Image 1 (cartoon, rainbow, N blue to C red):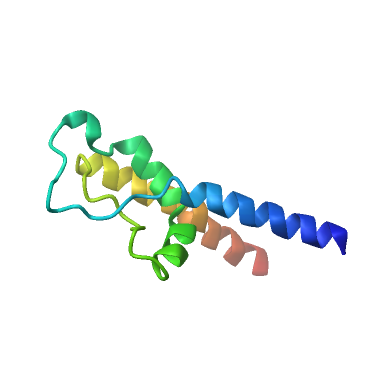
Image 2 (cartoon, rainbow, N blue to C red):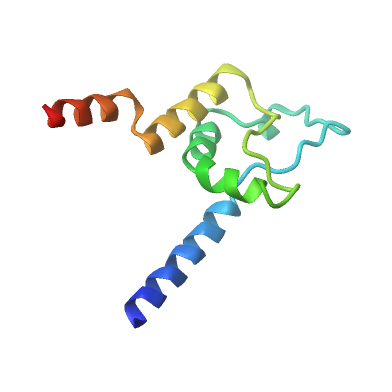
Length: 102
């Protein structure tokens, strides 16, 4: 029983730490203009990896978004989609499962 409780507490702690790195609110009123404030490939990759946790939190709060609006375009999108494919297994995960059933 203690092990289950400690694992649950650890999982909750990890979820809060990951959610702390999630993209913020969409501030269209004062958009960021400096190139240093825009999200690039690495931040897109991170946001893609934490997207399942961010999605669940975004259902209950308005201050967390899944996607960073202030990004540099294609590289952020590539990183975001690559991060999502890392988490959900991409195309190779489905192909490996299909081959093992035969």
